[in-house]
Length: 212
Image 1 (cartoon, rainbow, N blue to C red):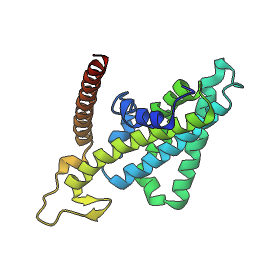
Image 2 (cartoon, rainbow, N blue to C red; image 1 turned 120 degrees about the horizontal axis):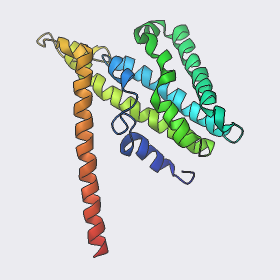
Image 3 (cartoon, rainbow, N blue to C red; image 1 turned 90 degrees about the vertical axis):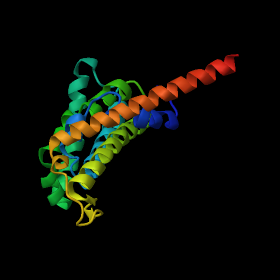
């Protein structure tokens, strides 16, 4: 809420309430653009930009926005920032714009952005809302890059387009296909869930020791 520290906001967005690993939202683009790390990075940066500034703007005008049209206002704000990202990519990174295809435009429908605008920015001041948007975007980007790391490495033998594995490596064709992203994401979610549960058990034990 309004009293959240930046540390708590980033801890929630990156780990405890990660939009992909915990909330299981925004996974369409997470599965679609993760065949290459550079694609994932650009998509992640674009989403951080849109989420952070959308949350900031929604928070800034929250007291002036009639409740019955707030969702339409939020979509309009998000669409404006997505258009900026789309225009920038087409102007300065045309090849990347083509590689990402329609998924840049689909940022508008990404549940992460609307979710943070409605759940956090609508109830909190602009600066915490901006940081919350950045944290959620970073959490999303981190998951994308982890998935893309394995897919690009095993599917192409490269990392960010740089050849890492030599001629001895036989590329795994399945890794550059969409099903691979499902399997990798499932494993990441499973590992993250087990780590969080272990942390909770340890915190509970510490609390019992302190109470004694």
